[in-house]
Length: 237
Image (cartoon, rainbow, N blue to C red; front, top):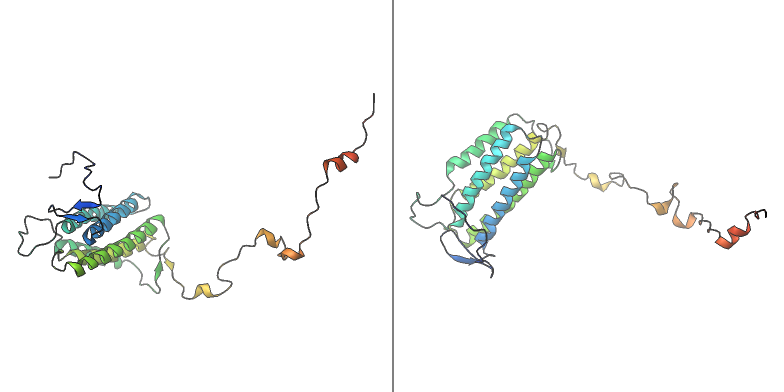
């Protein structure tokens, strides 16, 4: 059971931190970067779950995913050892990956097949889920870099879980876009045309689009003395 009685310890004031097994490493270590990015992903999922318009079943799933990501962070926090006691350390298991695959299949069956790539956007919930998807991809890359450095010290299901999770978040984003009807589709080469993006006329072009050298210069304001001279004299009483 976790019990936190102090928030700050001053143990990291010199750029070092402790892993779950007590090993001291620099905060720039690949392992710290990996589970730090997982923590960032968890925060983005929290934002997505808090937005309105998300289906209740999807919000409940996001809460489960957040809990899984804490498991995954705990997995990364303790380096995997050969012949370790599996009951002693918390590791991601194949059953957790299978839950993601089932959620992907169930939701994807209700979506229309894509005819183009999807741009992040649409509803607020969909945009947040797309953001979570990209952070998940970055977390996956950080874990892959850690595996290159310590191939035997990472849980076997960490990378498959993140890989499936990014796919699930993509499908969930489409569902949040009114089951794909509000998806923003990529139009290849659409930005090449000069008329693809409307150009707003600047004030220097004038109302009729005239060039600056064709505009009539503004009439200077009359000086106070000249303006006063044109006024009719007051009648003396």
